[in-house]
Length: 482
Ligand code: NAP
Ligand code: MG
Image 1 (cartoon, rainbow, N blue to C red):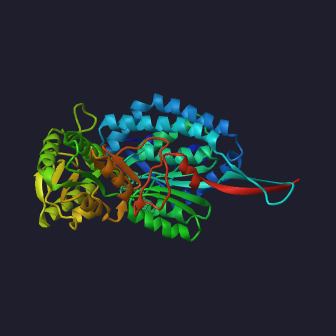
Image 2 (cartoon, helix red, strand yellow):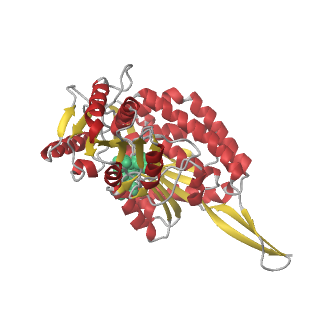
């Protein structure tokens, strides 16, 4: 039984707080169904407190020098290094991914701290030739104010890092609302900034349901930016709410990512990349491959290779060694995946492997599943499943492959496997995705490279790179006559 004292509450204005009758919700381990811990469900007045704390802190923080802000990020990088193992274990306990992946993710946060610390020095302005004598014009980037970061559970800390660190280095203050499934990991992340002495109010953490706490942030007059990663459905809702107060909104949303394999491709290379892209993080990545669009001539060989590699994957508790694939993050996800597979079969798909829950006493495990004979019109080929399900769609030409790839509401990530320079270049041009990979999987994000999707995978903003400053800063044009 967890004692009240171990329940951390909310992080507002530099300390962990809770009110007398604070309600708490459980964080559940999806591999064991055990309670990992309890997190505070913020009330709307506590959301107000967090925003007010960030609003007041902004007045000072925006005037700190860039090297000073960067120092906090360098210190955070070191502190994340020291807490790497502890944080990674918590992430795996809360959302199920194998611990090697969690460790890798903390590594990404460490690198993002360093990257953003450096990028701070490059928040360049512009000068423009004036149209009058004795006039000098310069344009400078200024921070916007309180940034609300709302994040999903599939990457508990790296997605938050991309947003929070970009906001902080450019002089904004932050209220963070992480997904409830990973609220304890968010506490560890936040505690690191407490320990390194980040000034109070600069980063605030509030936990609780999205529909209550997240929605309140979107309505709040003093929140100037919403940086959101999550489902397209919630992204649209947030945009609608935010429009009423003219907030800036940056959205990273869902995907229906495909790997296109042409008949001249290296099929061994393609198969390995497909299995990794489809089943890492149990398919719960916005960039996970959920469709293989393959030319008929090589379909059988590619399918055999992919099925054989998939059957070697070992599912289980991500904290144990030798495990390749963890559970789905919650029961609802498991049920959703199950429904999609049943529907796929109803619509003519053939299960090549997997297709059912794993025979285990506990945990939300689903076998990695490959479906063949999937038609482009089938629901399973159109909707984001967010689970370990991969659909094979056969096509008869490069042109048909591109048409099928582009025929979804999403446009996040597409891979193309070919040895033809001609088709590689045409693919790069004709694929409607924010991320295009030639001869590697759909799920790669390198720091410094703009990350995000077209169509309903986002609203045109990019992050993971300096492009995040486009939403985190505002231009001021200064005319001086001398
Ligand atoms: P989600 O249901 O949209 O939730 C994301 C976050 O929004 C959570 O913190 C959630 O809080 C909060 N939220 C829910 N309803 C809200 C509302 N009405 N107002 C304000 N906030 C609200 O997504 P998820 O299930 O956590 O994550 C999976 C989705 O994220 C997938 O669609 C995936 O493709 C997408 N994703 C996209 C990217 C990308 O970079 N493009 C990366 C990763 C994931 P609670 O859950 O605590 O209620
Ligand atoms: Mg959980």
